[in-house]
Image (cartoon, rainbow, N blue to C red; front, side, top):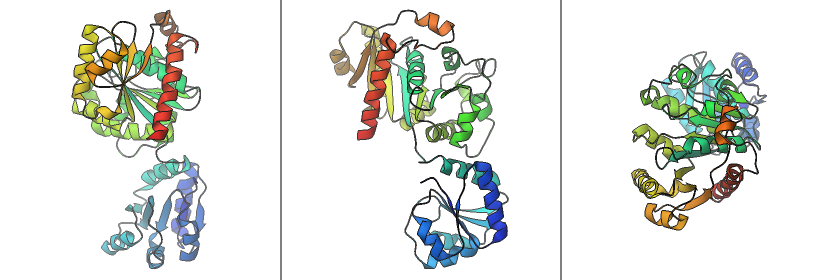
Length: 353
């Protein structure tokens, strides 16, 4: 269910909560006593419990569940935190100071499950392996069946917005997110980034931050963006830099799967092996071999990582990108077929995890 539950007899508090839910675009159920609260307690996507009924609800010993927040007017007294623990609340939040935060929480509650999408990382096993091309192609194909977002985490790369023909579309990029604090809702991010239909991109807007280097990415902004992206999209694809950096390692750890693009030459395989050895959790890694040369079985033995797919080079790739069409012009091309197969395999792996 996606319906939140408000529990309070305080008409003033309820009026303000209803105002916030209207701003978030959700319609809540309302309970005015403990008995009514218990009937909707387990099924609600979110529970906002007024301070006036905390003791009454706690006395009924409701089942433990997540997404329960106690709401007070003004700063909460110390005893309120003890009462909140008895009902398993995650937070005690006060109005009006927490208006914006509660609106974001309600927005996410209206979007359904808190972890909606699959997050895929793509990284080049060597320079020029084609990781950005694959990341954008995955986003294009995934957008045919649901909301998709390509996250450009490589400030020195070619630019995912350019690869997808979205560089002139209005929307926010990293330069805006690093200036903000607080929780970001999935819907807010989905509506804010440049997009064409169900496909959006979060990257480095032209002329703003493109030459600033990796220091412009800040950990808090990346964490909030990836969390909101997962909640607001069916598929999130992160184009990762090859730079050894603690923040990159953290992003890798937040991905469900990480695809390492390998060029099947001696140098390409050796470079990919070193990169795979540097990443902490190899269990989430899979290889995508681009082109012909060293056979996939040998590449897997050298790197210690399974090969998930092989794909041939595609004719007219640069032309398609130059025309603003993105790397996948047709599902029947080598890249289109490979990406359709990749996404199918990744969905099966995700369902089995």
